[in-house]
Image (cartoon, rainbow, N blue to C red; front, side, top):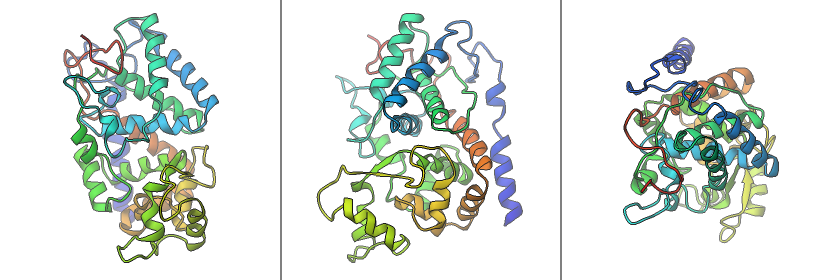
Amino acid sequence: MAKSLLFLIALSLLAFAPLCFCHNKNNYGGYLYPQFYDHSCPKAQQIVQSIVAKAVAREARMAASLLRLHFHDCFVKGCEGSILLDSSKNIITEKTSNPNRNSIRGLEVIDAIKSAIENECPSTVSCADIVALAARDSTVLAGGPHWEVPLGRRDSRSASLSGSNNDIPAPNNTFETILTKFKRQKLNIVDLVALSGSHTIGNSRCTSFRQRLYNQTGRGLADFTLDQSYAAQLRNGCPRSGGDQNLFFLDFVSPTKFDNSYFKNLLASKGLLNSDQILVTKSQVAKQLVQQYAQNNQLFLEQFATSMIKMGNISPLTGLRGEIRKNCRKVNS
């Protein structure tokens, strides 16, 4: 088992390395590469970094929100900015889906970045690429790893409310359902565990884990896999009814620092969401990965960066497909 696990990690680290180093600069082959805007908009990454830094300085939680925005974009129709679109005559927004309603954040930060970039180089940098860059910069600001973001995505002209409801992993999904949703995006169990580590920062609402405190099995019993003293603390702020929007740290040990304490919490039966704790209780392979990341912070950070690049390459629109939106909230007229 140990050898096969090491093989999985090595395979995940190596399988898509060329994405970062592809030099097919006409971009018609469907490839992304970090230097895409070096000539057409050389200040793009600097602008993103500056505005994200100010937003996170104002509110540390914004780092997790921007990272989550990228995740929720990529898992629905690919990384093509559909999550940013408002409802219109021909579009039903993804912002009202179950995973996004009352919880998706950071849209105003993306708006500010887009406005600044449009002033610098109009109709050049996609909203999808801005979201990808903002996710990377947010991770770095929280103390996480840096990676070169492959660029060249274009923006979709449509959204998918059903895709948002069905394709984004939910806190109450079973392990097999979550793994299936990852595999559907050509992500594997190593990516699943590493990317779950993004819950080392940010918050979750009471409504997302209440069932673990009061009725996990449908028989009025709490989740026996949750540390009972921790559960008692959570009940103080998450009552049986009401308080749906009350916020709790996903990682109570170091809630604004991007590190491996999230995995240590899981091993202590103190994962906040059911989808967190099942990484230890429902899969031996996932548990071994959790143990490795809990023991080795650097291993986690390296794999997280690798898996983020892989996730960022889910079904991008390139070449002549899609468009470069002038306003991230609506398609070009």
